[in-house]
Image 1: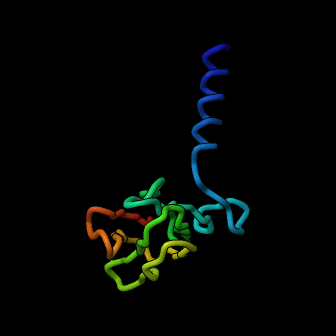
Image 2 (image 1 turned 90 degrees about the vertical axis):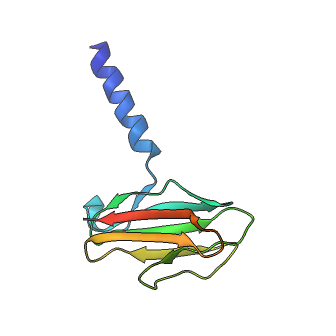
Length: 112
């Protein structure tokens, strides 16, 4: 009984740690919006896998200017505040980086 209670609490904690807000679709895959913080010289809580059709919103919280730049040409402005949102379709691997910091500040999202 104690083990089951512990597993249930651990699952709730893991679920709460996810930065996932549903944007329509009743929480079904392919319609979620996930969040990434653009901090000083790094992206925090970068999701590595999303469903095709999911979106990611980057929110600037640091004090320095950064960008979110994809190899496909989709890009945010180099900015010190605000947000940038992108939907992921079709399936594939999407690499991104900051134009100010290059590959030292980068991430990858796989849409499947």
